[in-house]
Image (tube, rainbow, N blue to C red):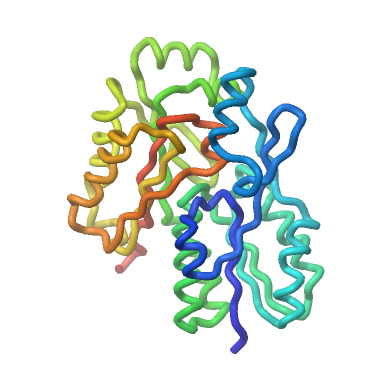
Length: 288
């Protein structure tokens, strides 16, 4: 059986260690700051995004990897006869998976599956790691694809935001909502459902107790969650007290095999800003 190559885009927010350990290839999405276009994770950093926003009051624009990008990435593996599984940012948020599928048609001599994660950030990363682990265990290509496509409906991603400035400037919420949230000290929870982001709930007060309450709420029915892995994912420069509040809730549950901390990349940073944090995991399948 041929080797299977696992590929993700930079929105997956996996740690560098995980990427190296599982030999995962990462294709950058694009970030536009003013009139300059950068590659996520290559020549732009979250701190550059913060600096741009603070100077201009303009949020960055993020855009999909294009068809030539995918052709260039797929080509050496396809020429070596290696089958490819790409798991990408939700089609409800980006056309990246569509571009990957168009590029895959250029390589008819190998199997290339381009899976819509219906998710973002480590909601994607959880699926990518599952695929990589199955490939390492020798699971067949078609079975990996089948299992990951099923799991896309069970990967849970959500984040609590300290402020709505970035969402407002990016056109994702009104000025009235943003100002009202700030005046009332409201911290919204943004969740991914059916491939798009929406407001799931809100918390009131300072960020640390709100983050702790958020995490505890997610774990109320913890027996429904897969214990294999959870991510605590947060934007760069998030207050360590906020990170510790969520991480300690996850660890003290004594349930997960591992709780991994990771930094959110340009997609979450561009839309949410500093002091944004999420607890992400996969729910159990029926019968597990």
